Length: 468
View 1 (tube, one colour):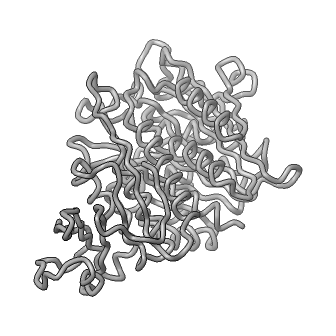
View 2 (cartoon, rainbow, N blue to C red):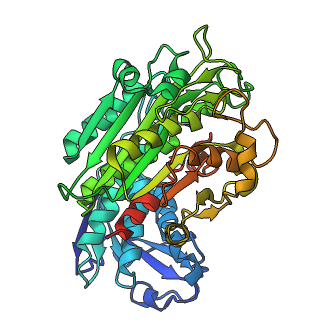
View 3 (cartoon, rainbow, N blue to C red):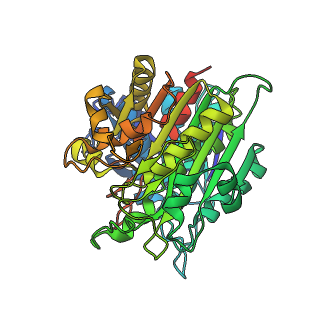
């Protein structure tokens, strides 16, 4: 899609008229019909025709409380009706705020996502020009919305891709190409370098797979010789069988999505580079395939880690926290960022706690928690804080190693995983863990099977913006 700003409306061309619930006075200049059977409820739409036979799409934006869902309203409208659009369409943006304009563009761009990327016959996407009509200068909002929607679609495509294509090396290649295109640095650490530097936990998780693990290091630096403002770490398990603690076969095919946290990190770094934000940022992706093989690590094994701490393996299906532990330790040792956020599809426990409504947020920093929570509500990518009480440290106790990777208890699983990660943060005062297992991948009105949501790209990018 191509987005343009113009000040003048063409009454002979198709147009989208966004309307808030109960505030339909704006429709008088487009139609003389009094009873339209349309009230402006969120995400509802109605088609009427103008005097020139042009299509006029009335789009409901709901009430004030629905302001964070404008993106979804535009996405739904475009998804359902753009097959009938000509090469161009207008959007009446006169009554939209700058933020609403950006949301509208994101929603329209998201409607372009084609989940059937591996079908032999692909749908042809027509090149649409969308003209936003406004007396205000909304050029920046159009550009930022376009970039955000595009990047989110790319990240969703990564998460939805099958594991035989999406190996750890594939993620490394993706990041390398992105870095060249958008002018940031990317280094991919391969097997020999991982051994040399001591990424023992990453190696242990990946040693049962024919596809070797990698660690991807991305650096976006705008202030040379200054501190790193923020470091991100993403879990990049490209397929998770559970290892020798093998998962049930039901829905096992969806474990291609277990690199959702890595996808967010890759997407945020790319989007921040596109937007040219004034920030120093590092993104780390620790990527492996957790497979079943004669070389797989076992329950009962004791492995080392980048930090030097030894870990007793209780459950090989608690592998995400192992690769994150190495990623966190590496980030802190090599870059010493002011703030750290790790992102992962980490536990089923967080889904049982928060369902599919919010990500689990863990931090001892109340300022970070409040800022992230506020941004989550504004972007409709909500987070909810869960505790990191000292009470849970006993669940990590091991008689034969420094700590164990799984408590074995059927309770507080998300908290225990977060406490495990905390042990590798060197008591960093500005660390946050986000468990996105329930919100990264799931049911969608835009696909028949479960699919990627794109959750986290806007949340973390807007958090990065808040640092300036």
